[in-house]
Amino acid sequence: MVPSSTTLASSLALRGIDRRKFLKFCSAMVSTLALPPKYTAQVVKALSNTKRPILVWLQFQDCAGNSESMLRSSHPSVAEVVLDLLSWEYHEIIMAGAGKQAEAVLERVVRENRGKYIAVVEGAIPLADEGVYCTIGGRSAVDIAREVCSGAVATIAVGACAWDGGIVKAHPNPTGAVGLEEAVPGLKVVNLGGCPHNPANTAAVLTHYLTFNDLPALDQYNRPLFAYGRLIHDQCERRAHYDAGRYVQEWGDEGHRKGYCLYKMGCKGPQATYNCPTVRWNDATSWPVKAGHGCISCASHRFWDTRSPFYERLPDVPGFGVDVPISKIGWTLVGAVTGATVVHGVGQVIREKVRPDDTPPVDEAGAARPSSGPRHN
Image 1 (cartoon, one colour):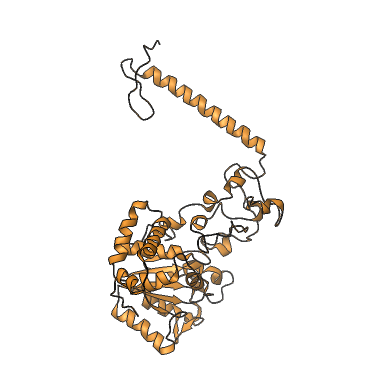
Image 2: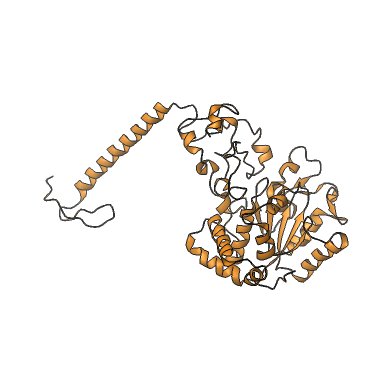
């Protein structure tokens, strides 16, 4: 095992990973973080010289879907994240140890590295009946979360269940399951909603922390703005079909085969904020809407309760609106352009009236341009 004190550059050299692959990874992280390309050099420098932080991954009431998403990712590959960026000390699915040996590792990390390690939590945490519905090594999930996460420099809640309880919290919720923030108030948490989360965003959060020694900017739900700051509807490759009034009417029809908008099939993209259309999945090749299925808004707060039924269409989506004939859209645009032209003309006349005669006219960039002769009012 490569010790945690080893820098990323040394770890890469030991594993025979060339610099081109490393630079490609850094460039991908800068793009995911929605940073200008000039930050690539800063990321490269930080990841090359920073000592690899320790990470522990806790699993509670979950389906292991977020772990599977991370392990099956190849952009960035799990090897790049696990073996290079981090010293991944504890994760029940992938660690070699089990039972008392595994628990001893977690205890050692918390005891010897308090305030230095990063904790990742997957799955909801049950509170009913003193948390008896999820226990590990005889301890309740909430007890483990309090001890481990309170000693972490930062905690990342991956997936819907760890964020807000997810499907486990959905009615009737007999175990009293809740998300991490509700179970352990006061933590410094980054929520990576999604069912499952996108591992590229997890790697990007870690990269941001290692580069700037701080977590990325967060929204009101403590989700990173770079990943959850824009509507899916505004990033979707099917948006042009929505604006033109071309919709899938039923699964498998001609519109479906041609890639028309899935709004009428219940797509929740107009209400969902996520970077699915740009980061994508499976080596960044596709995402649900591109594959032909509407967005179910899985990265939205309490989506199991607030976005279902998943195949029922949303009402009153802003824009041209559904069922608007193309001819009407055309005349609307003509009217808008005409109105804008009239307003511009009136404004120009007013500017000409109030401008002193000795003031030279300017172009759109603000530079003085030669006068075409005297003006007559």
